[in-house]
Image 1 (cartoon, protein in one colour):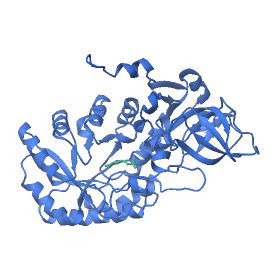
Image 2 (cartoon, rainbow, N blue to C red):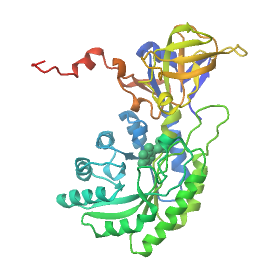
Image 3 (cartoon, rainbow, N blue to C red):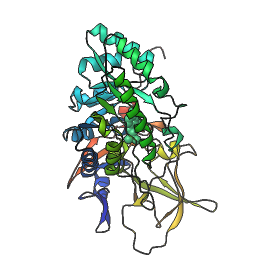
Image 4 (cartoon, rainbow, N blue to C red):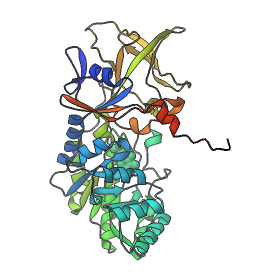
Length: 421
Ligand SMILES: *Cc1c(COP(=O)(O)O)cnc(C)c1O
């Protein structure tokens, strides 16, 4: 459920007509709903009630300071995958004790920044990384709390580019080698083992792969404890999917996920961490764009819109589907017609949808790409020297620009022409 609904024939974000925002900030832009973000966070928080737990928002899905602060103020932790994300979380006021550092290639500089600034735990993904962390922590005279990311070799049954828990993926340590790697961890100075970490992929629409992975984590917990390791925390990753179409998809709800977590690992008495990104931010955001031209092609009509693949890359990168709706509510019973919906970038890949049924549209009409709050703005680029598009946050009847559109001058001023050129 989200808070982007038609009212009086106009698509609103909570109580604000989106056409009003478009008139003030121009198109294209991203718009997020505070109520939706908070609702999704609390669904997870409630789903794990009764267990000691921390919901760590996956910052990579949407890293705007205003979004991080909104969630942190409700008690959310953060899962970060780079020094930049760590700095963002700290700048948004998140205490180090609520930040988990994930990622397959943390550098020594990133480790040092997190150890100095405060960190809840590092999720370590390889032996060389653990060696490096041991050296960095020792040189600072501190000890680094770690969980080791194990790769449980389960098939998440999701898009290949966002599946991470198969043995052929680059992530984590094969579960078959977990015990020897934990033994190494116990022997290293500056390393304090606190738990086990697992994350098998993104946009999972079935609980069974999670269940299979968490059962393996539960077994491993008992083995490791028998070998003398202190396993007090389980980080179960993110990845719960969202409905991208309003029609037929019904991925499991956070409540059902919570029940499954209790069933698989509840008996171990561990503190539970989860790292949802998409389910919190995905349906809490839309991208609003304007039709520039309607072009009649050979046997098909194109809607050329002012948003493009550089603003929202998911369709060209993952063949992702986004529902696309006009801001003006179509009259009931209006005859739809198929359009190819494309952006202005000079790539055939700059296609959002092919033969998508839409009510008839004309140049100047505004449309919204739904479910664009996760992996939207964060993956944007300035390809074709198209400025990063603004982000707007709505709360009730108020809205604020939370990232402004840079001017061409801003963009050009970042380049430096050497005096010998
Ligand atoms: C991407 C990622 C997440 C978030 O995944 P979602 O599908 O957005 O919930 C969580 N943890 C790790 C380690 C990740 O890489």
